[in-house]
Length: 304
Image 1 (tube, helix red, strand yellow):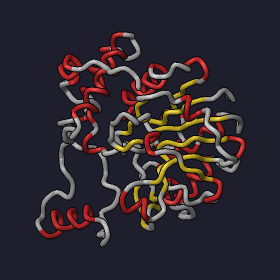
Image 2: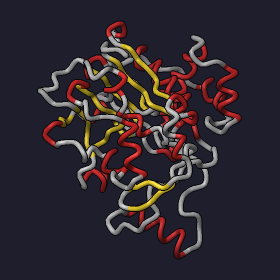
Image 3: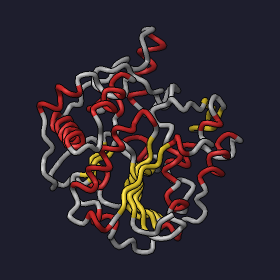
Image 4: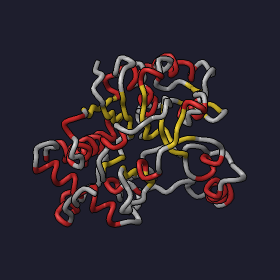
């Protein structure tokens, strides 16, 4: 338990490499690195998640099956930092596919104007529907004593809580939430303003290019207002083709690939990630098989 300002990265075994690179980037790119801690929250340390393996839970108004092998099985843990902080002090929680470009202390140290949470809206149809992006949150832990992750998680399986309402922060009083600038959670966009780069589009995460897709699409229901839903319907129901691509694709922005692999190269050089671990991750299809060759082409850029 700690009340020192802390950035938490929540992850599972499939995204551990991303979490380690993220952890390194947060300290590397902050001139205030001595003022805050960075901790990884791993699903393996919280067995209550695995206890629900194969059981049905409520998501987006329907039933889904809980699988620890899902790429995003760590997401309930984004609500755990207040507990780990003893409901004291400031915390940030981020996904393991988020990397610091600028100084995260600027976010940790900002005026929260009495709010409990700061985040940004989701993009696309979900954002228009009021969904907030909980993938990066600045938290005043003393104001979040009602966040008890295991209790909330178990409510999903009693169909008393909808996963999407939870993740979208729709269960929180809206007046308790403030909005920060998009550059603190930049969705697959790297500009001179970006402070936290989020490789949020799973299909194009730079470290997975060419690997078989190992995630389940969020929904197979036809949604009349989402073009992607129509495309899935046409491919699977009308043409009999796979509803989703079968392999991870290259990221459309080569600079973001260069950014990640430059950081990874530094992690190897500094012993933060071992060659043995990286080869194990490649063998497990968690990391693209040409990772060493890609690293040879890239060096990490300097912080903004």
